[in-house]
Length: 388
Image 1 (cartoon, one colour):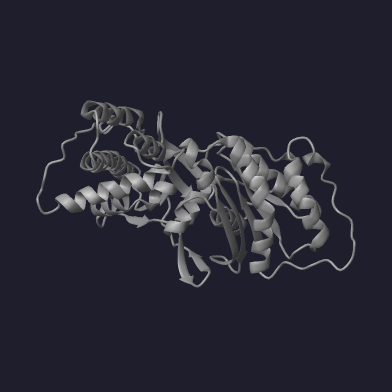
Image 2: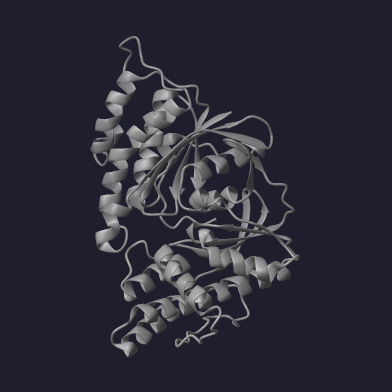
């Protein structure tokens, strides 16, 4: 089965084409991703209206590039009719303007189904991907599989690279535990099997990735803040490794001993704000020390809660997904704390952030398990708060 996948949940426009060759193997035949970081940097975060516009502008060129990479883009030799796209007139006229010449120029490719993110995320952005999927489904007469964005992050960490563009689903001992950490989510999810999830803990306020971004703004770092904070934190660790200089800042570890698996990162962000104000002017060394103390505190909570949950539910596999899964310090500390008690699965760095490959992989697990949740394309809806 060949799957075309679409991701537009936030500020990354992604198109991918995956081929499931047997039960466990998937070949990545095409992949394209367009980032909007430069567009949103001046706002210090994602501006939904601009994200929607950028998705509409980029999705069709990315579709053409991905189909071409997969060897599936074939020009029409006749003037066959263009599908009725009138449903796009009211809210997606820009997208329609890009799709009409695409359908006029190219034949239906050898695609068996379309997978598209329906939530969670920014609803204006989600709708662009959903409406593009609807248009392709109508034009090509193929089914659509709605995908939860967070499931994509879980599955992206549960594959192993076996060759160029060839991936194998890991042999996982279920139930597994998934720590999902991103700009919008911090969750602990019990994975009974792919497609069957039970959320056992979540943030009560800010997500950890959101806290990283807010701390970056407090200490004067550019958007996106997570990598910038981690860079400064690592510089402090390296500079003080031999001298054992004590960090001048001390921050709380929120909910570390709460007795449940929930998180809270709003308080630690506020503590960083107060610490910065107390210094009046932060020197470069202060910024490094404060970034280090914040990252250390936040990740200490993530690690201890995750291992406590793994012990409580007797899971021996921990799957870490989401943008913060690329954080090197998190990977090191979780591996150090877990030791030989659990198998840790992290995504490749490029798969940790939002992309269409993970959406296609999630759809592939549904096809493999014969739990394919196909929908009438006209019934697809964006749900910004969609939960696993």
